[in-house]
Image (cartoon, rainbow over all chains, first blue to last red; front, side, top):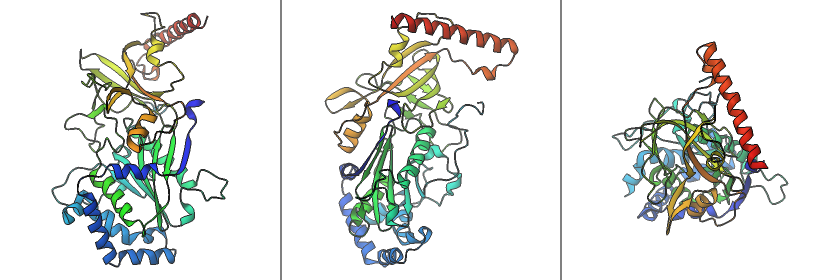
Length: 82
Length: 328
């Protein structure tokens, strides 16, 4: 039965460390540019309002999806900001 | 394959998929990947995912007063992780992201459990959110995303092609990186469990002598002998028993260590900088056995079925004798 014993580790600092480790040259600049763009638009405010309004998940994240996930496909954000 | 046998390529995987999937897709000439109907994506194309929930209460980390350590979203995503590992058995771990209300966290699933990060606020930690999405979708290699470095897609093959791709597979480590086998077809068997040995078997051809073999990869407990060692106890040419061709632990060159056995602990150590201990710390083990047979239920004639059954009985008797001789 030893093989079937798993462990859940909550609130670990490890995963985020890994993403910092995997940084590539220039990513900090790109992240900062994207963050500035997002904060300069209405999407984040719209998202925060959606959270306050307790919208259904189909609509809650729409502002973030439109700016981050969809545009980021195929590295278009990298192209746009680098 | 029979419907009684799990078949990683053809078994009926659930249609329900994570909210966002990290998918390997054909390259495009434009900057944007065309929208893809997730329903058409095969599970073997998925190497990571994002699961979203509306409410903060649905997050993966229990409240400080909560008595339930495993939250529903963690179980739900464990199910996604096991399906990914079953559909692409050379995947060694699965990375994911949980988004719930205005918070998010990061997850790591492997054969010994799950590691979940602390909660981060999307507004206050927007830079982390952007960095993670960028890393997952644009920068990280398939090996950083969890694919076994000793199993490489054959040139011209991909996870998104119609037929299951072929791989060149080695045992890894210093001086041992030359591919030894080429798989063909989907896995003959692929474990459906997240925790455990994660056994997968493939039809393969030895690149040294073109011999057909069954290639088997599994996570073995360090408290038990390896399957390759067990084969050494079996009398050569025992009737009805497969022969071991080659078998050893899979190894990576990590830093100064050129032949480090791949363990769950090692992957966590060099990917997550996690030096904590892992229960049993299972080792990735790989062996090739021959000849390549076929299931009894695929027998074409009664004679074939009877001869196959007889061989299985003789093999069972040989293994019992081998077990007795090592036990006393």
